[in-house]
Length: 300
Picture 1 (cartoon, rainbow, N blue to C red):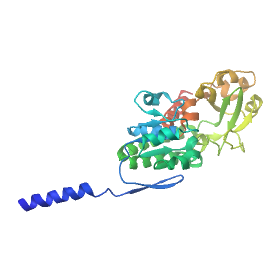
Picture 2 (cartoon, rainbow, N blue to C red; picture 1 turned 90 degrees about the vertical axis):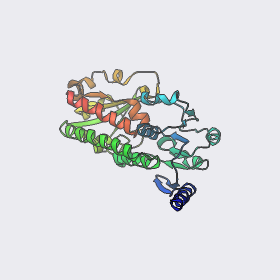
Picture 3 (cartoon, rainbow, N blue to C red; picture 1 turned 180 degrees about the horizontal axis):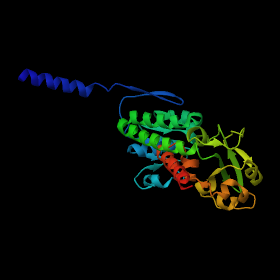
Picture 4 (cartoon, one colour; picture 1 turned 90 degrees about the horizontal axis):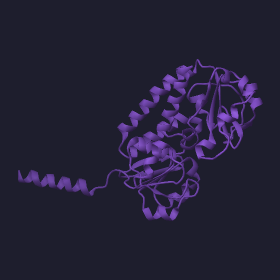
C-alpha cells in the first residue's frame, strides 16, 4: 500500500510539472503554438468577439466604438477599451500583458504590430467562402478555449437554420443587396462583401457583373427600376454607425422605386445594419441574419 501511495504521488508530481502538449493553431496570417487555455484575452475583432461571447469565453479587452446590443455587456463587465479597430492603443495592450490577442477584418492590418506584444491570431472572414470561414473560426476558438462541444452546438444551429433558408430562397425569385450611406447607394453582387446572400443563402442575383470592390457599385433609383429585383435587401450604414441623415427607408420612398416588384410586393427588407456592416461574420450575428431573412420570406 505504501509503495502504491508513493507511486501515485510521483505520478501526480510529474503531471503537475510537465507542460501541456502544445497545440498548433493556424490562422489567416500564420500559425502559433498554444499550450494552455488563455486566461487574459483581447478580442480585437467584432466577429471574433461575437463568437467568444457565444462560447462563453471571458474577454479582458475590447476595441472602442459601437457594439451590437447583444455585446453591450462588455461595456459594464470590466473589459477595458483599448483604442479602436483601426488604431489600437498598443501601450495599454502591452500593460495588460494578454495571453492572446484575436484580430481580424478591420484590425487585420495591425496584426504584425499586435503580434509583437503577445501571441496573436488573425480570424478575418474569407468573403469568398463566408460560411465555412465562420464555422472554421468558431471551431478554432473552441479548440483554443476547450469549448469544442459548445462550438459544435453553435455550428449545428447555424446549419439547421441555413438549410431552411436555402430551401425558401431557392423559390423566392431574384434578389439584390444594397447599402445606403450619406444619401448615396451602392449595389453588391456575387463576389462582393455581401456575396453570402447569393452563394451562401441561395438567392439568385438580380444583377450580374457588379463591381466587387469593398464599397460596391454606385447606383441610382433608375438602376433599381431597371434591375427590378423580386427582393431588395438593404443595409443602412448610417444607422449602423450612428450617423444622422436620411434613412434608407426615406431614400427608397420615391416614384421610381415604387414601380419595382420589390416595392409592390412589399419585399424590401431592411437588414440589421449593425450585424451586416459592423459585426460581419460573428456566428450570433449570422444566425440572427438568417432568421430575419427567413422570417421575411415566410411572411410573404
